Length: 239
Length: 239
DNA sequence: CAGCTCATGTGAACGGCTTTTACATGAGGC
DNA sequence: GCCTCATGTAAAAGCCGTTCACATGAGCTG
Image 1 (cartoon, chains in turn blue, yellow, orange, red):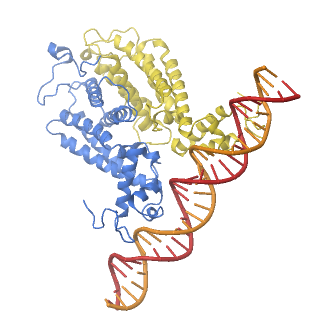
Image 2 (cartoon, helix red, strand yellow; image 1 turned 60 degrees about the vertical axis):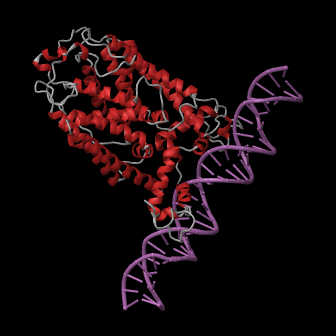
Image 3 (cartoon, helix red, strand yellow; image 1 turned 90 degrees about the vertical axis):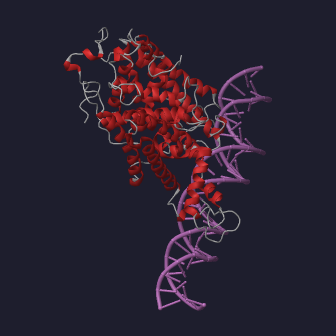
């Protein structure tokens, strides 16, 4: 993790040696501190110890730097979701819930990435690589939805996986952007964002006819025939 | 709608006469054209025909102007939701769906307001009036959720209205910010945002045990006992 | 090793933005 | 009719994004 040239600190020749990476790192720091709007090209250059003109050797302009960060964000996001999904192990529902938590965790732990990805106001069509990266991340959710849809109880009509994926994504993004980040947009909630999202998804899945019990092999009893102690439903004791 | 002093156009004395309003209007125009980040204090002043320093007589700084817009946005938002809700007429479910469509319509037709309200990155705690306005808008959703919750079928545990409201809000906001605005962040969808959200909410409500039929007085048949023709579910023919 | 080349960094400069300060104007109350 | 004070202006400081001509030196070529 350490560089040949001393962390851009005191002694550094005319050439930085790894400016592009240093700029991306600096930008991440700054965005997480001051938001994507407050972030400054010149600040990033200063933090990397170069002149304000140097970044232009690596990025056409400020927007391209932000787009690079968004793209990298989507890649890490995809990796995080992939790991959480773990190809549906040990069972589809458990893995699915893990994906939801991973979504929120990413938004909370990488607010700089998240806002670059979703709140930077970049023209989405002008950047094919960026859009492709976003598409790949969404593909994970879509794949998970596909597997879930295949599990739909036989009696019910099978829901379109694409629609399910879009629904799940909108719930996750909604919760993450309204309540998810540590500091910003905080409202007093009767429950944590994770609990809120989990309950939301469980209710939604139940609406599609899925069993809401967590045990893998358990055949779900019909909705009106659950044991009395199980009637609490997907929400806790929230008033 | 016309002002004593000719629309800030040609002849205007030393004093503008209605600068504050003109600035808010100009800012709205600019934000809707170039996003809240691209909007410029100086530009708004120019558009109002005054010097760049004049706005400081009416707003402490650029952020306060944006906050004013956000607040005004929440007020119009609240009005739109209130009108859509219409106190639950003609029946709770119909009115509830109207609220969902009103939410999306607002995000689409007033993108400047919407982004000032939700994407400007303002510190929410630093602005009590703004937060209160947001709270009042949310209160409409909450009130609607309350009425819906009261309709929960007797056999089911009654869902907490606050949680329902948060769920509905996160779905609406998720759909609106991911797919809702005319130009930005557009993805190819198999259905319109309105249809997407309506299906999402219907499935969710069904997960809570609500009947998904639209007719007001109709007593819902148990989930497993619907007439065959009704099994299509809340989604259309989406692939 | 000498020499060349080209990617990478520098310094200076332009225009624009935000914000402050001292000053100008004139609308409305006395 | 005069005074006052809210409201506007001009000028200036400091920052930022961006460009351009120029400097540096890493790495190839011989």
